[in-house]
Amino acid sequence: MKEFNVGIDCKDNKDNGNSFQSLIESASNVIFTKNQLLRIDDVSKLTTLAKSTINVWESTQRFPKSISLSPTIKVWTLESIVRWLEKAKT
Image (cartoon, rainbow, N blue to C red; front, side, top):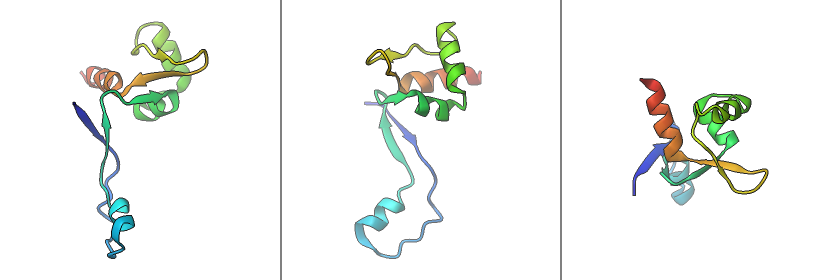
């Protein structure tokens, strides 16, 4: 299974020896699988695109196609967004 490391660098956190809580707070990465489903708010944060732009670009095939879970909920796989971002870099 392919994994993506997405997260923030927490090197500034000091370990004061408070067992498990300290370990959690000092974690530097959150690991998501390629099949992780992202809602539009998450996609917007990852891409820095407005939700309206994502919707328009999806309808004009400039953005990956979403998966409809219900009439009001659509999601994207993390893998499709990462591939789109990598392609957009070039």
